[in-house]
Length: 309
Length: 279
Image (cartoon, rainbow over all chains, first blue to last red; front, side, top):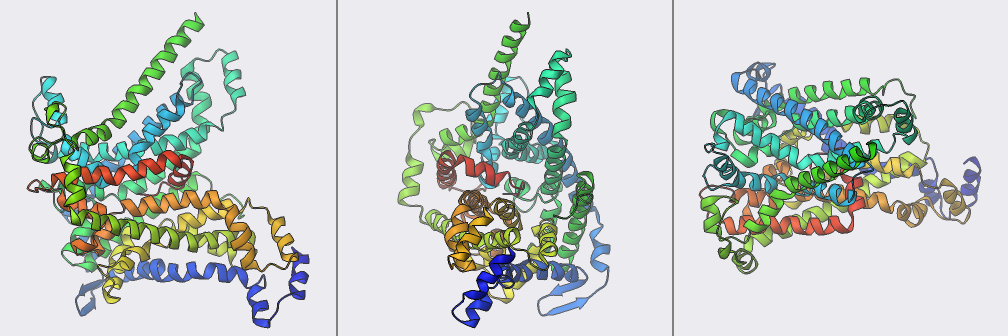
């Protein structure tokens, strides 16, 4: 590396070109477009958002109102939104961790043929947007007796369900939609991790007379710990950021707010009611929740112990 | 004895996988079949398992190709927005990831830590201030307004850095001796070597933009500017008489992606598993 600098010094037609081409300057030129866009489009709005949460923002009139927005945030509607979001997070995270682990282990086993085909099929729903996927679900889980889900229920001798109008079935629809779209992606994470399990360990366990379940529990699972922490974290964060899965079933408002989420509440208050300061306050609370979760993940994965490289 | 249990296990696993895949693909298959049903029927019954097969026809597609003008406007909007987002976000973030990996400069570690930190800031906190900025800059209801916030892609920076760490640095020294500038080295030698990572990130950004919903919903106001997800969502009302556009249009938004997926499966997998980014 040091020798190339002397080479640089020999070359360079003009002093300006030489300056722009020096290894001291080049990296900064490479990162500058990103830094500029990043300062304007991420850092500035983030700071603005925090400031806004202490303001009442009306067209042409902005006042600092201290903590009033935050005092207003803790109301029954927000608790409802937070409750819905939390239930959704718990359900999607558990399903989207356990199910993909099981399917990935099966897919990884030497017994299963057509691995690529299975993998591709399971991955396919991730290609559909939440809106298109939600549209399919909405038409399959319609209120009428003729919609697919109710047809099945009727054939089983049960009565039809008003899927979009009960709290439990509304939650079921949102969770199903999310699970359907993300199952294949999470399977890929676990499949990738399974490639790191050395075959000798399985052979050793087999010689010791371990059953399939014992091998899974004592050999496979410990190797999946890091990727599991990762999957759980991103699932929690994506769960708290959920909006579309609710919007596609109820647009702006659901009966009794059964589908209201934290981000949905930001949208409703900040955009639809134009109460930006209040919306920003909800956003700051959401950000704090996400920071805490990310922090816990970093601690669990030991990111703070590693040297900086 | 052992062999027997193995072959039973083998059957159970394979049949189980087939069943799981069928369940997962079932909604897609139902979408395809239902797109051939008369739209008035579909609106009345929803997606049904039992319906009159003799009524299947391609009227919905005929309609969408001949008369549904605004659908194709949305389509073109989505194409333009996705293409520009891919080009800009890749251009910006590939340079940064590369510089972080191959150059040793003051502030590098700090900058990288910053990128990782920003990964954690949810877009939802930025959207209200960004919307305000768009109003001030008069970019509401414009392509630029949708695209701008999407070009900052810290996840792509992270990915490119990781990839560029494996680039052959000796090539750079050789090129320098041959008199190449640092920029020439990047564009002519290193960037082509980063091809696979560019492919993966193009898919990630492109799919994210193609399916993006919340931000376009906020910024786009007029029917002529809508992207596909926003446009299709407006048709999703119980009173709508546009189910022909809705259902055939949905098929037409997924089919190009599935075709791309079949050809570039590797890149899709690498792109979509980069950081579990919400798409």
